[in-house]
Amino acid sequence: MNSTISHDHSASDYVDLKLGEEGPVQSSLFESISYYAARFPKLTAVQDHDSTLTYLELNTHSSRSAALLRQHGVKQGNAVAVCLPRSQELIVLMLAILKAGATVVPLDAASPPNRQAAILADSQARFLITSQEAHSRSVPSATYKTLHVGELVAGNLPDDQGQFQASSVASTAFLFYTSGTTGRPKGVQVPLTAIERLAHQPRFVPMSIGDRYAHISNPAFDALSFDVWVPLLTGGCIVVFSAEETADFEGFARKLEKRSIKTMFMTVSLFNAMVDYGATCFTTLEHLLIGGEQINPHTVQGWYEANPQSTCQIHNIYGPTECATFALSYPIPRSFSGDTVPIGRPIASTDCQLRSSNGEEANPTETAELYVGGAGVAHGYLNREEETQHSFVELSDGRRWYRTGDLVRLNNKGS
Image (cartoon, rainbow, N blue to C red):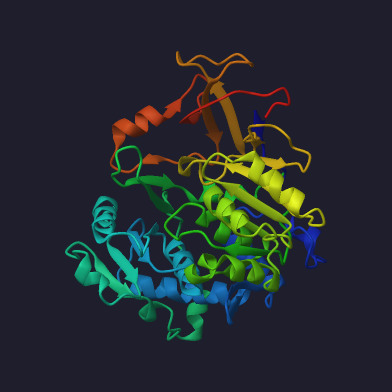
């Protein structure tokens, strides 16, 4: 099973682009943001409640913040931890860290201090960006410098700093920490190219200029890559929802409609809880991606039956952190009546194969371990060489593959 990126188009092919049309596939996140900043300078890139940033403003602000990071001593390849809630500032600063050539280490502000301390130590973070004055007192700070968000987004630099030249992107753009089977935080080294391939063609959902995406994922989890970077790669708008808003199911459902959200990812558990609370939620969305655990097909069928007039397409999305968020996708048809929802086919620039317990390629009807390859495969686990060698393997084709540990089989439709 495989899917590959289509050929890029030249910028001249898109001089007459309008909202609602599909933009070109750029070679990098930075180029995409610059492209939309130049051609659609007033196009909204981020909406955080009453505050908005256009693509031009986002590009300029993040460059100024990157210059400030350099002034504070951030160097190429440094690990920079960020402990902020979902917000406009978080997006600007993550982009600034990337432009400064450093690695983003996102922290969950609600996680216990000992977990945060373990991640800061394992990642060898040199800097911690936070809005919490008490954070430096709750987590030992002998090895890193704390920077407060107000120091980096105040916009106090002269205008010529807007011409900031971004550094080469760090080999590891993000360190996403998972608990793994041991419960100890385990850092997955994700390159930016792995995230960028989420917008490669053919695309697993439509991604058009001006599309509005709900940002509801925990900033420390890799689903952030879809919420934030896919919109910016494709001319979309990131619409930030607070934790308080997503906890109020009835109010959240209303705000999805009020804020004209088109596409959203959420965990299966949150989807189940919201549908149980009120089955009319999500009706104004066009695409709802759910994943993170096995889907109950009856819950999806029940939602479809309760909302016959809605055009929303629900997708089962599969992908471990080690494969940059998403690897396979299955649009669940309204007519689906099976007992198990397939995980689907590989998205663009992603390959899959099934291997038996002896390491040999499995027969088509055999239940076997899923291996994922392609541009989304992470470098490995930080400071865990033995685990990296076990899970990230080079096969006879000379390519690196990630062993998911998940047992799957092909159905008669190739999913």
